[in-house]
Each structure stands twice: as structure tokens, then as C-alpha cells.
Image (tube, rainbow over all chains, first blue to last red; front, side, top):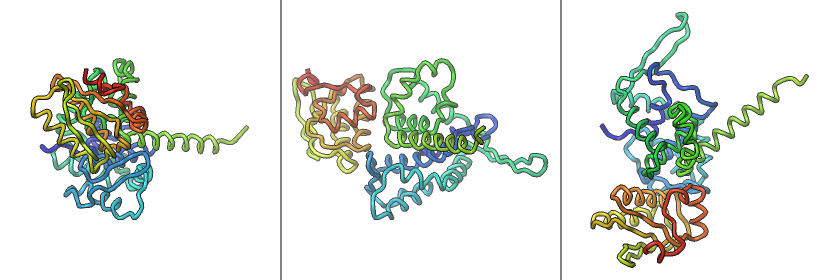
Length: 221
Length: 108
């Protein structure tokens, strides 16, 4: 099996193992995580580069991966370079266009299956239970060992940990006292990729904005 | 980017000058791959001429350090310029990579 893209990894790890339901994440967190994953996939494919100021197109030719090429075309079509945060916002607004093709591919790979149910015969409920849990177990074990140990991550694992931390998925995937004691180590690893850091910033800002809006809507006594 | 390879006190040394970005990174990566293939287990990057490093540049550094460590060796980063030190600090690289003030101390 070819290696999963970051986008597929985030989609897969955002689902509950048993039920196939999406894990409960803060508002817009998964959208930013998926947007960051697309940027990370394009970066490791050598198509774009990033720094704190901008996303730069290195090679606008298609990757051949339909999960990535529409987004590369979008970035390449811009006449001015924008920062990572800009593309996180644009991509996350179109989250389903990232998520659904990734879910479809995970089903094609035989990792997930689709399950449609009705609640009270009316409300539709779609879930994606696991068929083959090997990939999910493998990535969790590998990243868990990195967090609990002192080994250097390779760039790919550093990016994935940073993305998972940025969209708060690490809270679900690496829970338990052994991981709670490694909070500082996780924070260090999560800092290692620029896109992951930007995902974390965007997620935090969205939570703060939502909290402020909710507080403002509460009538003062 | 200008890449100069030499040996100091028996340690392979790669001196980088200019911008370490997505355009330059593959050439640096290729140098590292050649050194590893030759059996090198020690490598020092002379960073005194690096004006800028993008994410692609940082990935090359991390990859080199990881490969050297996996091979049972070490990878040092010497004489960081202020812009590179700032990027290393933001990215947490100062905490996980082997940093030296001078090339001499890195190769010792």
C-alpha cells in the first residue's frame, strides 16, 4: 500500500475507532487541520515552500494526486504570495472538498467503510467504521513512542504531530497519564513545523472568537 | 546557495552560504545522502553564511540529523547566524539538535 497522505492521516485519525463517528473537536479545528494537511502534502511533494511570511510555489505542475492538485492550482493561480494563515482560511472554508475525497480514498484502500443509518427513521447519520485498523494503530504507536521517548522525529513525523496538535486531535489520540506527563515534549515536537503552528494559532483564535461571541450574547443581569 | 564540503579534524563539514529554501534544499539533501552513502557517521553544518531558511530548509536539517542519529552518528550545527538562530528557536530546533558556537567546537 502506498503511504497515506497527511490529509488521509488526519481524516482517519479524526474518526472514532469503533463507531466511525467524528471525534468531538473545537469549532473549525478539523477544517484548519485538513487545510494544513493539504499544504503539508504539497510541501513534501516539493510543490510549495513556506516561511512565516508567505507560501511560495516552487513547481506549479500537477502532482497527479486528485486530492492535492485542485489546491495547488488555486495557490498557483494567485498573482501575489499569501501567508499560510490565508490559505488555511480559504481551504478550511471548503473543508468538505478536502474531507470527502480523502474519505473516499480511505474506503478504496479498504481502511474504512461507509455506514448510513436513520435515527427515528428520519435523521440521516453517516459514519465511517474501520475495516482495517493496521494503519491507524501503526501511526499511533510510532508517534506515541516519539512523544514518550527522546528520539529525534523525522520530518514527516514532526509534521504529522504538529498538525494533530494544531487541530487538538492529540488530546484524543494520546490520552492517559503517561502522555499527560509528556506535555512539554509534545509541545516541543509540535513546534517543529510552521504549518502545524499556524493551524494551532488559527484554531485558538477561532475558539477565542467563539467564546467572546457567546459571552456577548448572554444578557447582563 | 553555495555549498562547500571539506573535512575538519576528520569530520565532514558542509558550509552553506546564502538562502536555504525549497530551491536550494535538494542540493543540500543530495550532499548529505552522498556523505551517508560513503559511510560518514559524523557531519557538521557550518551555518555562518546562512541568510535565510524556509520550511524546506529546516526539513533538510532535521532529516540529516535524524539519519545520522539512526546510523549511530551525530550531526552538529555550528555558528548559527541571528536569523537562523531565531528560526531554530521558534521551531524548537535549539532544544533537539546539537548546536555549537563554532565550527571548531562542533568538529572537535
